[in-house]
Image (cartoon, rainbow, N blue to C red; front, side, top):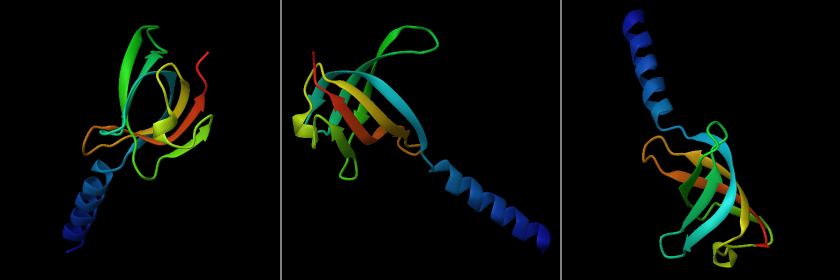
Length: 105
């Protein structure tokens, strides 16, 4: 009986963990803004390789904004951004928790 209960707990925790997001910081320059799809495309430098890469980041109703903007509609190409993002384990999307914008130079 105890063995079955332990197995059930382990399985439940595994299923729960599979939907948990993994948070990280991302910094770069805005390449494009898709207001309809609520997606920012950001060019960043990979810290390990030094290579430039573009990352698509989804924003949602819970995303917070700071710095030079208060909403996605105010973000423009060329803005320098610092993002707190989560990789949604279920969908694979990178989702912004917060967007901090410094105006384009």
